[in-house]
Amino acid sequence: MLQVYNKIYNNKIGAEVSYYFLINGHGLKKYYEVSYELISDINYEYSRYIIELQGNIKNIGKIENDMILYTPLLFSSIKAQRRLAVLSKFVLYVISIVNNIPIYRIPKKVEYYHNGVNMQLSVNAFIKTTYALIPRFEKIYRS
Image 1 (spheres, one colour):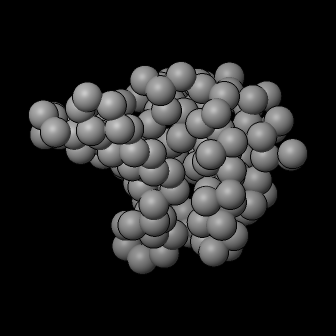
Image 2 (image 1 turned 60 degrees about the vertical axis):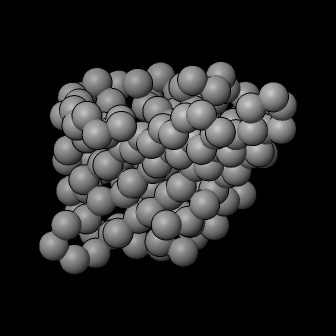
């Protein structure tokens, strides 16, 4: 997994927050995964989105580089509690731009895991909220 963001908090309770990205664009199961990990003195949290893709994805190296480059800019403009969801949609946007594929043709299945609880999310709702965030993504990606 590729670490795209990391922050360490040093107050009364020490904590480290990390975001990771992994893409598998070829093979039998094509997917990308975005995960969040919080390690503190008193708590541990782990969440992730796994988005199964409909077709093969090209230019994986470019997508990974763009994620490393633009994630800090993205996180500076959104609230902390929404970061994982917005990051998962930003990956969809980057894949769409780099591969010149419409966003609605990319995801096949969306799953969300939070501390051992698995949920199947609506692909249609995921796509609609991605389209709602495109103006913000364009400002970041085109800068």
